[in-house]
Length: 95
Image (tube, rainbow, N blue to C red; front, side, top):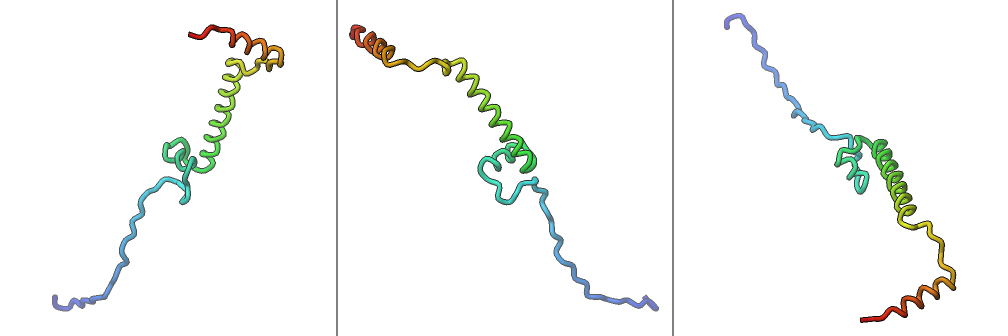
């Protein structure tokens, strides 16, 4: 190594930071919002709102259909009709 000049420099590197890839989840997402995100039904808060609104519409629709077909639209009994029905029930022989 004759004629070569070697320079030794004190070089220090900061420790490499490694970042884990995390889903686009808000830091304080919990409850129903967090559940929808964890299930993968939505990717962000706007998607969660859309999923929850769609769920609400479906629930209201199903409730309305059940109410219509399960007799929810029957008229209320008048006092005379109520008395007639309760008298008929009381006359049934008990075993």
